[in-house]
Amino acid sequence: MKGLVHISFAKIDFECPYCGLKYEDNEDKYLDRCNKNKSGYTKIKCKCGNRFGFVYDITGQALGFMLNPSKEEQDKANYFKSLLKSNQL
Image 1 (cartoon, helix red, strand yellow):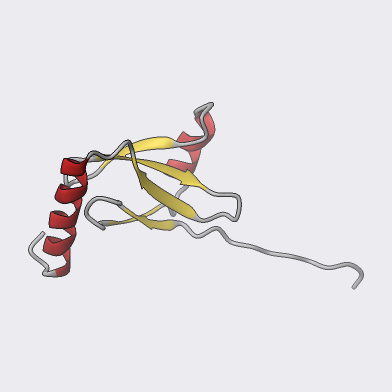
Image 2 (cartoon, one colour):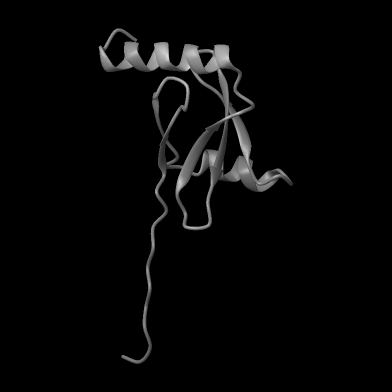
């Protein structure tokens, strides 16, 4: 066999940056949405009520990020994360 075969898989699981809720992109739903946008990312509305950005980086990692977070949103995010950790959400 000549040559080198390189197989890589993208990391398709990511979290809401506000509450930590886990998402997966098994069927490339979010990847397709990113590819349709000129910006290369898409927005997702989480069950916690916040919208966050989503993108695949150049290494294939799925990343969720806050969209212009205010101090109030950051406090709300910390509150939801504490609820998630205590299994109350």
